[in-house]
Length: 181
Ligand SMILES: [Zn+2]
Image (cartoon, rainbow, N blue to C red):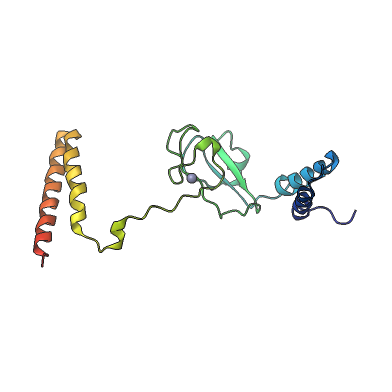
């Protein structure tokens, strides 16, 4: 036996075996599995530990040593980050609060129970308005909608936001009139 197998040499052997389309003896598969397990998941030293309160949607933060050893007692979720895959290059999913494993990621739309470790949101659909110079009149419609929705507010808020939206809509209309050529 020459050198100890590495992840790279194991993957190379696996690909060769796949290309040859020949059955692989169980003992060989065993060695491959063992190599991958020890090299990828074995006694590596984590680059860092991160934690967050259990069942929360709070972001992960660096864990202190006491939190690592007593994470259960402190009701924390703990994770160790290793060099493989590289730590830090990865983006967490954001689950809606209280989704209990059933929710969809707010960024990429992936379902929680089958999502992979990385969040890869699709590029946002381009709004045609971003091609033209900004116009104040675009605000009128959302403001009118807000004005309409004030009917669901309590009397105090309703009065406040009706006055506010009416004022802004009038000002925008005046401004638009004034800037007509
Ligand atoms: Zn996501």
